[in-house]
Length: 289
Image 1: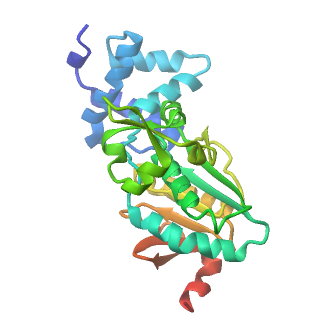
Image 2: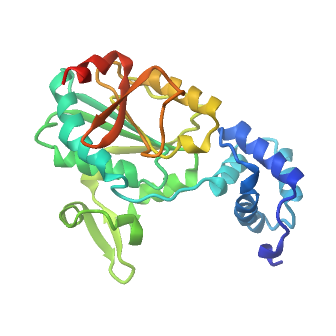
Image 3: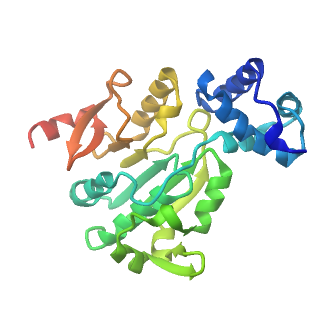
């Protein structure tokens, strides 16, 4: 069968899948996404050798334990486009301001960073590079970078730690030499080094169904909230507030995202041209700087 010729989702089929995706992940799919969803679901039909979307929906709903197939469904639906040093101003602020600030405050010498929605690993590995660049500042610290995503296939890709092409285009040349090894010259494929890999722990996490880590110093959740409706955005940010340190915490979201009208628990601060939020308990620190 030519799976590309399977007719587009009907409006009724789209509504069923959109509701299922929303209920399972909080991802809100507008009706204008019907062609996009059709194209992505065709990949799953092809894998299962099914001939229609209605047949696939029935297949999903009839599973005694739907967990694995829901993961497969969300995996093909999710957008996982990312690259190293994406929105580099956040990383400049991390190195120059956030890490020195936290290092000057914390007596227990522990640093917990969460990359929420880490996709194929470029973001947490970029964070690891930044931390390695501040080794002298963080000597003797217990450092943990938690990298989570709902899609297990992107996590498996991230654990391998091999990248090429556009994914590594923005890595500064000096960092390429220090932190990457060319493993397949014919493909331009590079592997991230152990000094970065050992800092990152990858795990699967559903932002609306699984418990969050606690006492986080820095949360990266960039270009994730755009996939959720306002109610889910509010819930997510409220959960971030419960998870973050009220004395040291920083929340980094995407440059096109905002917490305006979503949360009053975080306050916006501008650090080195990077949009960053802190718990409201900290805002007076920045007003006096």
